[in-house]
Image (cartoon, rainbow, N blue to C red):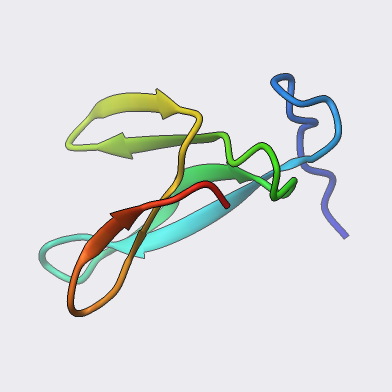
Length: 70
């Protein structure tokens, strides 16, 4: 089992990686990292080569993109 880094924001969760697919279908490994602590919700992601850091994770579905504390 892999060891993931501890979340330095809440000190309770760990950061786990999320993968995605690019525009042309290529796998993007570790596109985002999210904290496993539901009360924290910290995330870090890469979009078009830019890093965005936040404390609220966006949850999307087919009908709408909602920003919600996880």
